[in-house]
Amino acid sequence: MRTRTLALLAALCLLPAIGCGPEVPTVTITAIAPLTGEAQVYGQEIANGIQLRHERLQAGDEEIGYNVVLEVVDSEGDPAQAATLLETAFTSSLAAIGGVTSDEALAMIPVVNEADRVLLSPSASSPELSGVSEFFYRLYPSAEIEASTMATFLRDRLQVERLVVVAQDTAFGTSLADAIDSVWGTQLAGRVVFTAASDQNAMVDEALSYDADAIYVAASGSALAEAMQALRLGGFNEPHDYLAASSSLAIGSVLTEAGPAANNSVLTAPPYDTESLDEPVASFVAAYQEKHGTVPSYYAALGYDALWVYIEALSEVDVIAVPSDFLKGMRAVRELQGVTGNIQFRETGDVQKFTRIYQIVDAKLVDFEKYQKERRDELMKKIQENMRQLERANRN
Image (cartoon, rainbow, N blue to C red; front, side, top):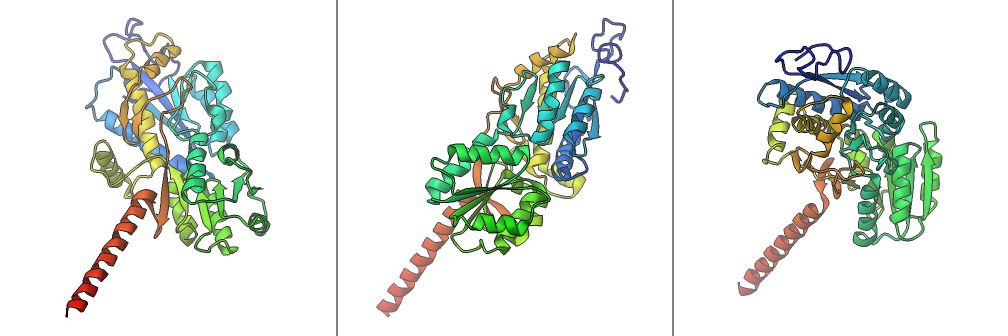
């Protein structure tokens, strides 16, 4: 299972006929993720999920016709380094998992096209990645879907008329801001761009100067948490000052860093319920908690499912004579019920998933519509109880 490989066709022994005898062929999958740096909050969770799925495979309960060696390397959040690591990985690996951020994924695409080998991104969402290569797939919905969900919610559900977008100057932030702008329906009240070196006070002053009903923060990681804190401290904290955030807020460490500033804010994220008793979610959550002592974030689930997709694809391919043969297995993946839900890919390589609205209540992520219904039901019970008490008092 842990045989070190040197070259795909020579050392991997993908074909038993090439002198490998009856042994099961070995394939190497390389996971490239930011285990350090600003994006490590996502990369480490994703890597944890990938490794957990590999451990389950190594347990020997699944027969896929291949031994799978997993190698995990650190991109340090550097897109250029991620591309270099991918080029190195493709000298011995059949396929790779990587492109945790949109910046990294975009930098890795030329390597994918040159090598004709599959790259599966667990979490990149830039619309620019849609259909960019027949060898590129991703498990996270395009930013266009996330933006459309949020724009529709703010406009139709909360009746927001003036929206300001505060965007981090990254591929992720820019793509979300552009998508929100294109689907908003009317002209945005304003758009503020910030970087790590930006003056937060100036950013807040500019954002508040537009007198908006809602502010949408298109950012990730610490940048998202810090921007939300700055806006709340700057005065955007009245009952009807709607603060909205990207799906990045769904990860526990980001939510913790945002602290009280996140309360009552709303965000978009794909459905994911760690308290579900349904499989495979329940067993995944239990295994992750046992190993890491924490509830797995959606990003950990994405990592778990990323390797699962490759396992499913390998089970669909009898012989891999050349690396591109693996593409047949990827195209054969249909209706895979993973931890993150049903996995089906479009011809563009995009996963067929949608996002929904969540609200932060007492530092916890809750389904917005479900929470609002519970509040309405609770209020109705109180009203009914008050009416009963009034009726009893009148009779007495």
